[in-house]
Length: 135
Image (cartoon, rainbow, N blue to C red; front, side):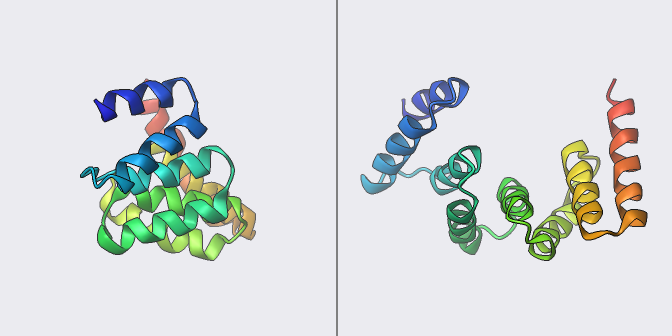
């Protein structure tokens, strides 16, 4: 039932309500594997990147290979303009994920922000190829 409520709140972009529901689930001891990650993603959606990083770090301490969290923390660090930290997590993810448009696009954006146009161009061209293939 909690998962159904979460799904509805996510679709409606009611992140404050979702934050309360997930927080209550965790406090009540409901075994929600994704609860901490969901709270981190809520913080990203609310542009609260510092809080998101803290929550993603907590989740990754127990689930170091979680792909959604690796992407989420990388994105949060990118938004905080901490590009080297963003790359640390996203390059770990790149080794595991093959053919992700979002990941390649973000890596290209980060390298562009760092002034490395050669790598930015490489990742943006990969993103374009993936996008063209998926049409």
